[in-house]
Image 1 (tube, rainbow, N blue to C red):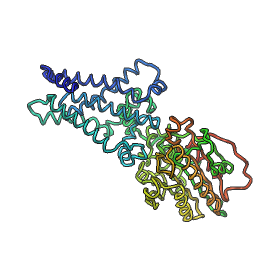
Image 2 (cartoon, helix red, strand yellow):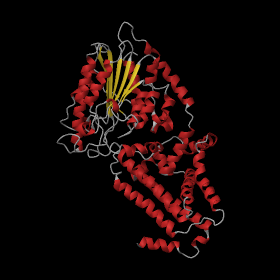
Image 3 (tube, one colour):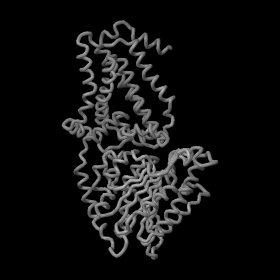
Image 4 (cartoon, helix red, strand yellow):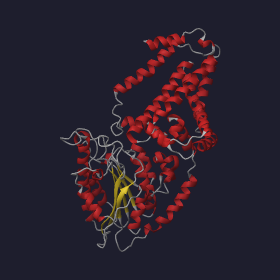
Length: 535
């Protein structure tokens, strides 16, 4: 009530709105001051120290000036719907603070601030709340949000006088809407976007979400990276990378015609990490130990991302591209999957006469895989709708045991006169690890460990089947990222996962020597497998 009285007193001060330009300018500058003061809290203090750039007066001034138009456009948006400068200031402050708060919450979970490609995931966050650990986005959340937005707006509309001119009101309303919205629309217009993108690229430099968030704040960083993404011409770099890959794949069609063609199975295990690396005792993973003895290459995998965003590791493996090669596409490469069609390994294999099949027991629209995977060279897809899965009966995700059964059926359909490439992305290990996932268990760590055991057992059944095939078989197994198991560690003490490149069936010569530990990156895995396979 005291706040309401203070606000009412402020808005009824004599002649306050008799100076509309001065009041509007003051409101904008006040909003800028608050935004500058609060944007830094998008990252924890330790991260701010770690990623802050060396002090440079010229760059600091440029960074401040660069943020002013972004704040001005948001301010103009609120002003255009109200013609009330104090309301516009409050709306602008709330807008930027909310973005900073979301960024801080995201960083708390997965060690990354908000990035522009997250906007493309908004619908998925609300559709798949559990997988994004967003169960708090419930009716209470919406009730509080609507009460705040519409309640505060109603108070301003009631107490604060508007500044809309008495004459030609429709004209001024249209003009203000154009001022607020036209710059955003023009960003999608090539002749405007390209020069703006060049300027922004020069300002931002090499895209780095943490550094940009520190320099420009969350929302301005998102906008700048989005502008670069829109203006980034990928044709040249894609052509260069395609030429680089072409030489590596030329011999793929050259398998011995007197023998059966090879089968490659990539098994991307969701949130898999051998917890024995982290000091967990009593955990037995016999299949992992078996793969270590059979592997042509094995070790720890320096994952693309800690704790989430499977698609980044997935795309790195499929494409052989480092994140730096992707530039601004690195955060969500499937948004522009078509740009990489001729680079990725599945396309190269498909053009070489191989069969390519993507298998993932989850909604086909998640991460836009239903559009991306055909563009990345997969001629067939088996997604959640291919499984007889009832969440109430079977739990939230398809088990690895059921997935192995599906993979065996698909392998049985593969001809042995042409190479076959199967990419399997599991879901069974994904969190949250809540009571009910495993009967009789409530501790998240114990639940995760038990699911690891179940996955290890299912993987053993797959290996037994692959060993029985009458053709050369190569298995690539890896964990996509460490689990978001915060009750165990936050952050994870060592986010590296495990990988194994294993020759099976006719791919085994019987003369293999034990291999030593080797750390590697996901973009090197398929190249390494093909090298070991003599392809």
